[in-house]
Image 1 (cartoon, rainbow, N blue to C red):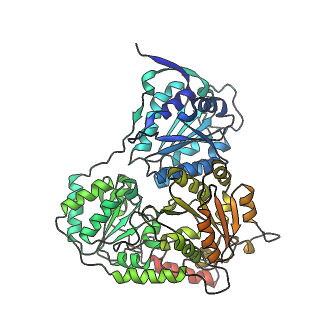
Image 2: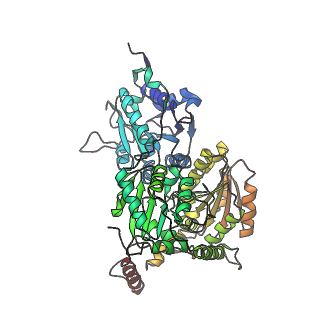
Image 3: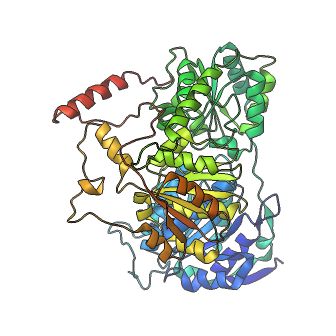
Length: 609
């Protein structure tokens, strides 16, 4: 007879999660971020209290930013470990939908456990319940369906026996990896059931390395053999496969230049001769010039996002071909690429073996030297009394950074400027630019530090993003998680204001000075951060900024350094066109001129076919 143990569904869930292990013997789900409410406090809340340190629970300040912390943890852990986040029904649940979309776009694992309505429907409609007039099965949690990789609604206790293994399979599958939502009906959380004891036997989840099809290997190798000027585009898949050393060895043996996407930056040390920097809209001159000449573009673990491709204008050689190595067939087949569906580490080895002694001509190192000279110029200490640019702030941080520093950001001016300018040591870059979600920064910095306490985490955040989501700063103070925030205050959304001007638009509703307000705000960010317990101070100059970053290393709480910056300058170097549609008719002369420039640039778009 099967041995059973009688538990509530919530108790069974947390017990099962607590024994799911990595190959290294750690919990795969490190713990649960929780804000309790009437949809989860009595069921999951009590179960989490009961299990204690076997599955730790942490309290955050906002459901979305708790999830951002969990996502940054998973990204830093190279998808080898993850976290769960639970909320009540209603706004607590829908607050997490944005974070779910962020995780989906970035192919990162996180387990969402929002409370749900009563499965028995006796008290309907309950507080915060969304009622669909035409479908009685709908709840607010259906909002998760488009933005998660697996969705299930737990309406009976025994559903755990199937939905939990499906959830972890998704989160640990390198091709399907992404967010999971298990909407947990609040009455079911408290219901008891006789679960098989064997269900709680510890299980090890291995991250597989899919081998490529032999025919695909042969086709890719043939394409490379016939090429004269190939370029490798390294994406996040290189990092998740832990293939950095393999990629560098392959590139050196074949003399192939490498460019790194936002997700792939930090795979190869910036000092390596074959690292030509960032491609596309936020790219270096060296990378974009090299890509313009390439007759074969070999993407490894990249989605070929429009920023990477310059909205498909960067690959300018009429003879160019596209090869895409990716675990997901969906990504590998984009834009008519020659696909290779495989793990990056395995794929590199297979391609290398199939190529024989094929190597390519020496690369133009003058491009790298010229690029670094141009970058040095825009990052140099200001030689005037005005406010510094974002590039000069990056230069300050770069000069005092170490091989242990991780630069991180998500939205605004800094992601583009950092991608273009930051000189990353291996593993020294963390950017959420798949969804470019304002508000990820502070919470994400905490997640990075939790995943790897040995790193010095520097969080670049503008005043706009800081205003959107800063409350997890208090959580980091309470948990004594130290990192450094460099808060650049340009008094508005400077990045979008520049885009607005570049598209021929009038300056409108981005900078406070151009907004419909009765008085210009005077926000004391130093006082605000200090009020949450952080160490906070103002840097009056670039030199002071450098000094304060070094001093922050001795603290066990977050440090916030505020510096005023000018909003007019962009990166100041590098970059290429980005397709942002300009109104075709009905505008003043400035719009007509912008539309003419836009039309001219569109003529350069060359999709692969």
